[in-house]
Length: 351
Ligand code: MRU
Image 1: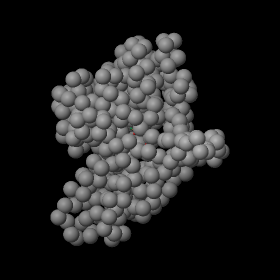
Image 2: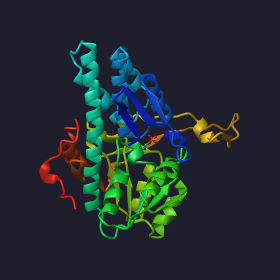
Image 3: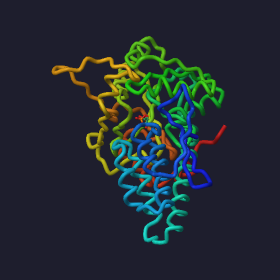
Image 4: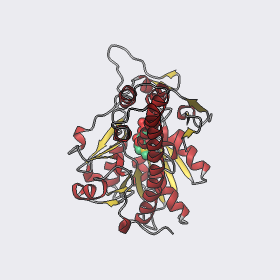
């Protein structure tokens, strides 16, 4: 679990920028520290930044600071993952009309803890659905970025599917793309999987195509930051080319995400805001400068891309597996995205 609400009214989170070399936990009672941690990717991954923002609001209320101001600040940290606004709106609804400071604080803590617990439960259900979806021949799974415990309340979405498949006795091995520029695949996915003893091979992003062509990848599973009503998926930059390569090579391309990642108010992925991060992340490797910038040379750093739904085989949610046409299946499975309100009849048996 990469974040915790502490009984003394503080939040403790793992600084993901220091992994895998150092495991440093930061404790704070200041929501601004949470906002900065989200901006800097000390806390990252769509579901996790929503959970962190919920805890941030509880900290603001505990310090007697205006919750609306904190909400504005937290909301502005990262634009692409809809889970952030979704969690903030849910927490604000929980204190609608509440004036008394103590009650406001208690309600915000309760709501943020619920969002956190529900996310972990949702991930286990995503894992169950995904493990059933994979065929027995799907032994080698490629994933991009990090959609694991570190990106969620716990267990993970894409890595949750891999964990559940492994727990069911599958010999899954993972190909993890390094994920330039911030190396979430190399640093975080490999770290998580090594702790679970799930075999993992890290490759550079540009190697994925040749692994697919040689028949060394059976399926691709990634997470998502926002899914539009038509099934277009925003995820870490580099996801779209993987989806196109998967189609070219006849490999299924799965997206694993909780229903809180669906934004059915957007008709297509064209409307998803794409975060542009500092070019410094591209021009430097850790602290070493690797690009000669000048009048003719610039750098750009879009953090996410959009994969058109025609490349997506299925979207695995906690409420079931959405297949094309996504307008219908996402509406059925994600329209009530205020937590994992699964339809019991669609939940696969654990086993
Ligand atoms: O910039 P990041 O590291 O926050 O990007 C994370 C991703 O792209 C993940 O794939 C996505 O948030 C899903 S996490 C379950």
